[in-house]
Image (cartoon, rainbow, N blue to C red; front, side, top):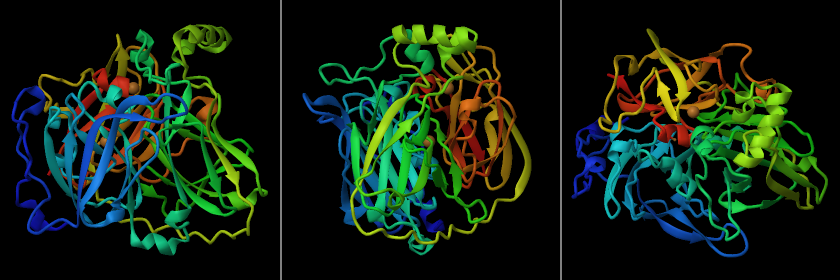
Length: 511
Ligand code: C2O
Ligand code: CU
Ligand code: CU
């Protein structure tokens, strides 16, 4: 990164009104002499959207515009989804965030390795009517990232009502890898929702929602219900992002063909890892997977669906009732009364193959692995627990009175690789958690055997670089993490109701 950039403070229009959510903090960022390559404005505001036929759905929505630089950096999305931001690696980006939501908010750039000042930590939230500006240089490799709100403890509600969008990083080298060109890419943002008769979104209804996280009974794709795509008989690159509050997907093709993954949260797999073929892909909230799919291998006019297959073993009611058949039955019965359940079979999207000339897939040349950071000696341990509707990391919840609090076991060195072990065996409810760390890409190096439910095991995708991983009850997962940028970041459960329920802590990457 350009050192010059480290010197100047950001121009942040700080909240004039003060108050807890607007506490001023020292803003230092990669920002400096000269203008950025790209200047965007992202606004969060109420909106009415056509999610399906009938009355419009009220909610929130991000809009964005290019103030300076490439016009193609913002691509509108349908339905209640924010526009897709397309950045290039190495680009210097300035983003003005405008809050018109009617309440505090802040934007987090999920998966992006940005300075602390740009990260969108809850303490950086500004009241409605305010705006702030951040800057960063795009250091992430080509991949599928996200942006979403992060004000504590209302991230779940704001995201559910429509605040979310994709952030795609491109690199010039992708052209030589045999990957489908951007016009043969499809992005699929998956969000399960409950929609009332009046077409309005139904958020939390019952106590179970705080425990399980809010689950819907239908899946919106890119903000629309019953999404359908027309595809040419050729190879596509599909970018699939789970942007659901709490839903775990077991993604599969209706015609039984395997899924071929080329990328995970943190970009393309390396040449050595290669294309990862799975009968289905298990995708936790806020994980992403990129697939390569040859629709040319189907006949003209073929209709294929992407579905989330039924699975058991993680339904909270089921496990509470002791699992097994009794548990399953009780779980099912209770589930009926308690709303949608984890593991239900769901339709995701339809694809129709247009007739035409088959275009043969090009040979893929995935990138060489990037140099790894030197291995250090540091080890970190975090025990996960969820009880009495609150989440804990090493026995602590997020402290909304002291949002910057960092304990000793939440510090790790920047610049070298440490091993961070997560153990999902704290006192409380046994449940799966999607664990996310801000500001880094890490590798899953070990999973304790035996705890991944049989029905989801073959879909686990731990290859490549991750920023979010799923951990099942009783499991221990070790990740290797080498923060490149020092600063105060976060580690949390990305089940948004768990996150809002305090299952979130700071972590400090020390220079
Ligand atoms: Cu995507 Cu702290 O979150
Ligand atoms: Cu994040
Ligand atoms: Cu959780």
